[in-house]
Image (cartoon, rainbow over all chains, first blue to last red; front, side):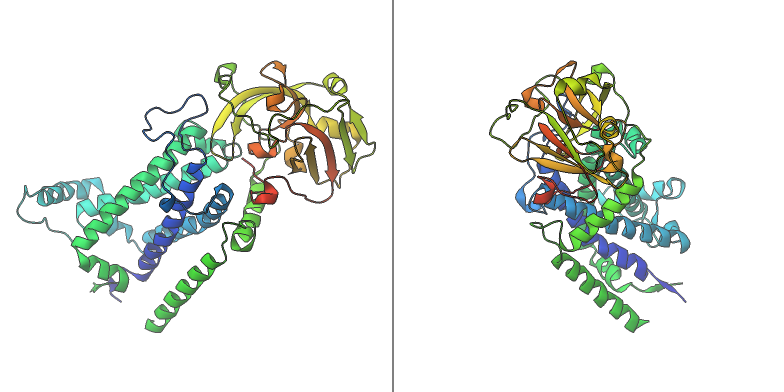
Length: 214
Length: 231
């Protein structure tokens, strides 16, 4: 049976990510509001430009610290399960091959796409489901999700799962990585939405599945 | 296939909307968030390794004086009541009331580990005192005492711990900090200090220790914060 551009497991996990990311980001920012600084007491990270700035209320979910923590640690499970379902499907259905960025295959196409978008190049480079730049963006987003989850588990259990904090340079490094990964994911989401608005067909495809591919 | 898909989508939306309706930020330990907390407590108990020690840090890691916040719920640091003693009771063979001097004559344990506050900050200080499990042994705490409740003279502030975390080798009843006697700011004359819980579980100004068969609550726990709060 021919498979559509966007098979249903991908559509399902894609759309589940919308409320899950909103809840995780909103409750995370409410947690951040309790101590809106990065770095340990007495040794703040000066590279962080927003030390002392509380995230605006309209971005926060959970009302207060305890409320937000419960939202965060409840929906974290769903976010992780959703991600595992997505990656498992990519693997067993071999979908990763046409979605993930393989440097030796996609770098040239990604560069050409950038040249096209910046009007250096007149014609769009040839592509199948995605161009190289899309593959790079989606793969980066997937890796950022991995970083956000691993750093999140590290700051949830910095003693029992101490080893997870090590790649981040300890608890406070992991906490900073957790926020930076969120910021980059938010940046990706903005770019993603802008591109979708410029190419409405892709929006139709992620809702209906799109035309079947051989 | 088409029907199945529509049902799946409808069920998905129904579950999603129903789930959100069962989440209340004001009462986060009830409803669906409460179910998740009980599940998370099971996971945390499973993750807890009574043998695993938090890394001991060098003296150079100590947070600068004045940078380590001190919280109490009374308007100011509550003064030590005259004739203070640590009362120890509940499921014990011999209930006792220890003076500070008696506690200081017991084996001393030093702990310098990273402190994790529920607010998100971390800090380091060194603490010395007597292991809670040594006190438990002294009074003959029963096997059935699965929980330990700690009460204070700080306007009724209290908390309670699972036995395994309370008996962890880095859980101490501290009477000293950074080489000095504990100051009123940080919980004098006696406070709980531990490596395996968030800061609000470490009761300051302790005057009573109870070994109990069932779980109780705590000042912040009763207001909606997680009860287990392991790190």
